[in-house]
Image (cartoon, rainbow, N blue to C red):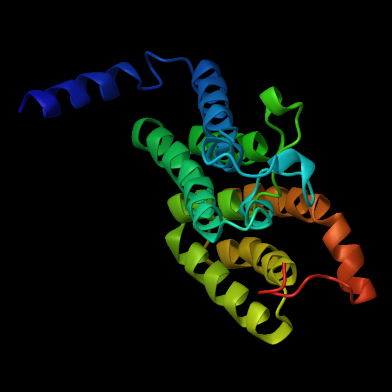
Length: 215
């Protein structure tokens, strides 16, 4: 009973009439950014005392690079945590302030993962966090993302091609669902994801991209 009363008081305090819209939006974005910028891959590999993640492979903090340390368990855990940080950031803001603040938290979490300030803005490529944010914002679109990813991965045996295709389909699915604002946000995020994958795109075009299972 007390817990329910505490939540009601907090939600009432954070309503727009008492919590100015601009401040609410800025807070949502910064909260999302801080969550997204947690470098789980780097933290886990340092705790496990593996190879320096920033000195191997692509040098980014994502699960694919963690896999290059030879620790599949750490890679899987990194993937899960990078996904969940996006989901948690968006759900937390959506609970108190749905609508525009939630979308800004989504963007913040994604940008935090891509460009963490405390790592000189050198982060991951954003696939797991993109999916985690999408799962919180529109689980049906996240399901479509997963189906496209699996289909393309099965046909091409390349995770980058699967991620690029799934991210490109996401805004279309959201538009079909009638979620135009969310589609616009994830369209922007998909463009950023493609930019972060520009080296992968070059290798895909040249036929030299690493295959799944051969990283």
